[in-house]
Structures are given as C-alpha cells and as structure tokens.
Length: 199
Image (cartoon, rainbow, N blue to C red; front, side, top):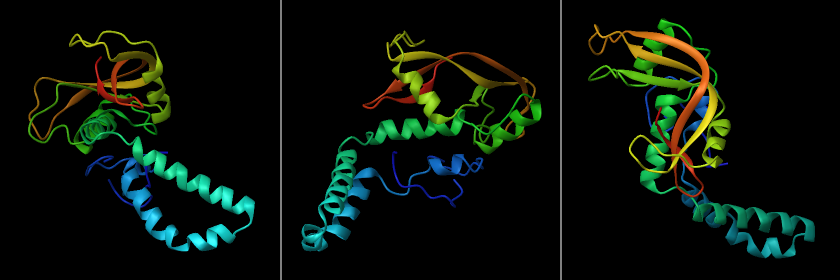
C-alpha cells in the first residue's frame, strides 16, 4: 500500500497523459503518505476524547490504524526516487497487455510518450503485476551496465519494441518481439523500488 489512489482518473503513475489499462489507473497517487498522515491527524485527533471512551477493541484498532499511517509517512520514497519509479512504471509496466505484435508497440510507444520529440530506439514492456516486478528488487545484487551494484535479475513476460530505423517522430514505427526472458532492473531506496530497466 503506497498511497491513496484515484480509481477514476486518467493518468502516469506518475505522471502522465498515457492511456493505461484500468488496472494501471490505480498506480497514480493523489496524496503522498506524509500528506495522508497529516490529513488523518487533522480529521481524527479532534475526536480523541471519543477515542478514549470507545470500547477497548475499537480503540486498539483505531490506534493501530493511526500508527500505521504515521509510520508509513516516515518511509515514503524520496522525491527523486519516486519520480524515477513513476517513470519506470510509465515506460515499462503493462500488466494487462498481451503485446507481441508491431501494432501494440506502435500504439504503446506513442501512448506512453516515448515518440514525442524523437523515436526511442528500444523499449521493453513487462507484462507482470507491479508487485511481481518489485519482488525482483529483493534478489541478489548484480552489476549494472553503468558499473553500479544495485541491479537485480528476474524472469518475466515482456514485449520488446525496436524502432525500424526508417521512421520519424512522432510517427515512429516498431518491430515487436514477445518472450519470457531474463531481465535486469536497477532498484533504489528503502524499501527498494525499480527505477531503471537495465537490460
């Protein structure tokens, strides 16, 4: 649970004007955890006397909820890390998509804003739940292409989109290749979040 979500809002995850699947709409936060915690305190602390008079079971549950929200507010991602995480989601995560053909790549590369000024030469879309992708960050550290040791490897379903070499932005054209393969992603923060698709 990372924030409150707007179920009806068209995105990026932050953010973005791409057109995600309904499942991906849940990714865009309305408030940060810190803002959520402050809002909770403003709403519920004025009624602290009622809380004290509540039955023990109710009082315990409310106090647990308050402590959970306040605690989560202390471990929210740093602003820069969160921005990189949201960019990773926009460019690489499509859990509902099946992919596998050129039309998919042509549409998704435009929809995810990677053909506006120039055609991105190569991009990979991962067709896995974000929690499955995040679990890769808990595997053993390996070396990234840039030499850093914050990369991790996992096996996921993907569609690789490679630009044909003869198209121009914004009408970029791609060749698609669908497979289940090893991928390497860079993770940062505490808790660790995927922030870069390495290879």
